[in-house]
Structure formats: structure tokens, C-alpha cells
Image (spheres, rainbow, N blue to C red):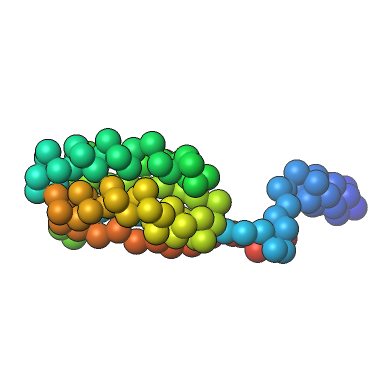
Amino acid sequence: MKKIAFGAAAAIALTLTTTPYAQDSQAPGYMIANYTIKDQAGYNKYMEEAGPLAPKFGGKIIVFNLNATAVEGEPKKVMAIAEFPSVADAQRFYNSPEYTAARKFRVASTEGSVIITEGFVPPKQ
């Protein structure tokens, strides 16, 4: 009987302390870049223009490593991840006139990839 009561109390405590997720919670959006710098001067121009833009679109840089190495696959020198409130916000940033102007410097000075993807929202418990 004590085991059942203890188990019930533990289940209630767990339920009360678990963070609930709304059924319609919106997944964050991510812009993930992985590239090698081929022209440092051009890349510096990109950073000058693009650096301050993400916050204007609700984004925040959560990873930016200029000397990233790969554990698997081919290593790239830069790994950057920006998080946005949604994929739509990430796309709005990427397609904005300000970032489009800066992006031309990155494209001309680097080799690699940039993707936009949706994050994970845990199901409602």
C-alpha cells in the first residue's frame, strides 16, 4: 500500500513540475551555416554588413565558431547557427534586402552551405 501511495505521489509531483507545451507551440527556426573562408577581406565585409542584422528579425546567434572541425565528414572552418522564433522569421531574415546585400559577400568569399530548418517542439504530455 505504501508503494502505491508513494508511486501516486511521485506521479502527481512529476505532472506538476513538468513544463507543459501547448499543442500549437511554434517550433523555432534555425539558419545553419557551414563553410570555408576563401577570401578573408570579402568575408570581413560580409561580417560588417550581416553581423548586426539577426536581432532585427528576432534572431539570436547561438553558435559562431570560426575554427570548427568536423568529427565526421569534411571539416569546415566556420560553423554558425542563428535561432529565430519561427522558420518564417528565419526566411524573412535570409530574404531581407539588408541580408541579401550582405550575402553576396559571403557567397563570393566562402565555399559551403547554409540551410534553414525548423526546430523540434516536444509533444504535449
